[in-house]
Image 1: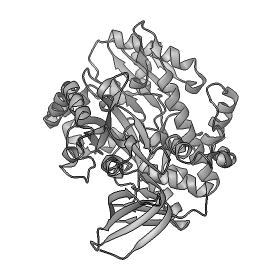
Image 2: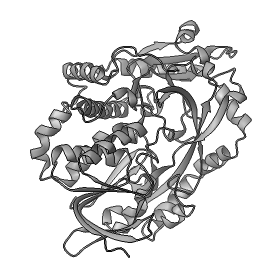
Image 3: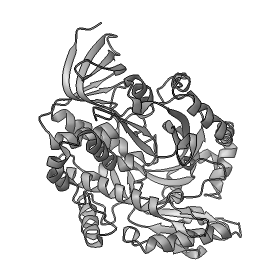
Image 4: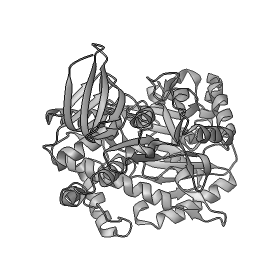
Length: 500
């Protein structure tokens, strides 16, 4: 046992994009608060936030078909797409503020302009895409979107995908040039460098083992220093659990009633990465297709240009898989130990309801390289096996809970904040669109957990996020102004050199 004990105002668990964002917001709002961070790995942004562990899509619903559902009457519901786009605009404004204030430098190290496209095949899908395009392009948030079902036009847009295509099936795509590729790993590291310069106490190789409430209402954490093996005690008034898949276990240990009846279902992912620079050079977009019938939304196939370490890469995937671990660096017992008396029925119900999903994931794990290549060839007909390697993506833990709409044990796709009634502790659970909407989600944490201060913080929040509290869709002039200024500050307005 170590005799190291600290008292602090805020403890952030996990050095990913969520803690980085919340820490940076709080440092701007209340610079004199003491803040401590614990991360079990040796540096920031190594799990779900890492650039090789996610798609790097600035999720703004510009290309993701699962955010626009077809209603029984055939019309397209775009409400979720509007929500996600508005949330991404909040992130863009905050990043822009950080660059303008010189709190982080060179935006091209973490964000690049890149067209976002949706691509479908088959008559029914083409009809749906056209309806989706009509619904979105009438909305100011999606201005500039183009639609084409003309193979010649598509050859201009996506030559790699259209070359040697022999199928006579109808094919169509939408394209919008205001999309982005975001390196969330780089952004996370930049934000933690900034926090360190502001005297935030960042402890790597420290694992939080237990969280409990003390008699005076503070939270006490039992933390193991992984280098020395000693256990330390740290107390804080407010704790944020932003440990990716590891958050669920810590939420359960806190014992708050809001954390009961919640389970988690882990899904692993694999991307294929192209190692032939000539092939990489032929593609310049993020192209999202449609998920296969029975496949979960997070396994929508996409062919992505990525900018990692200022180098252009090409990734295809994700192929879903199953591992009982909740983190890439987690334990094989994570899933089993997350089952508690209070969530047992919820988990069993989810298991019974989601047998087709479980079967699908098991089948995905069994795919050979050649079977992976066959799926890739639906996108790139002449793809050669020797040009592609595998990279294991991050673990995603989907939230399972009881809902009115879905009943007991409903699998949730999305990001969710669970906080105590008194706002003293909050945990972030779930997956995509996660990182892209981090700023919106962390503002939600501030609103829920600091109701007394939020009013006095409002002027500063509005300085950082000019659209705070306002719907951009309903204020096209403000939207245009923000679009123009963030694009300029983040270097997205003019065509940039393409790295090779």
